[in-house]
Image (cartoon, rainbow, N blue to C red; front, side, top):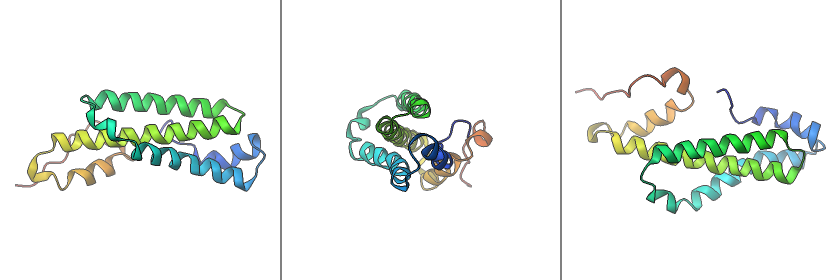
Length: 137
């Protein structure tokens, strides 16, 4: 992934910009999950979005902006806020993607679609141009 979540860099960023405290490193790691959890809990209005593709695009843009601001900030509070925003935006994109997959999947292959969607996310560059697997007849 080109602009993936820089979790592997958190120890180095913590040491270089935020004092290197284990507590701060724990906060950096937890911030993404807190944002995702808040987004999931407050996701009710997302059900009313008619164009999930646009919602997914907006979530991706918000995620990218949050990661960019996280990368340039020297403030721990701003860094934690941006990681939480990134986690919330990522959760929204996952919800929209899952909704789109379920909406276009035929009934007889509906059981396989969540597994395909989940497995395709980490391998998106390789599978991005291929069509979804068809169920055997």
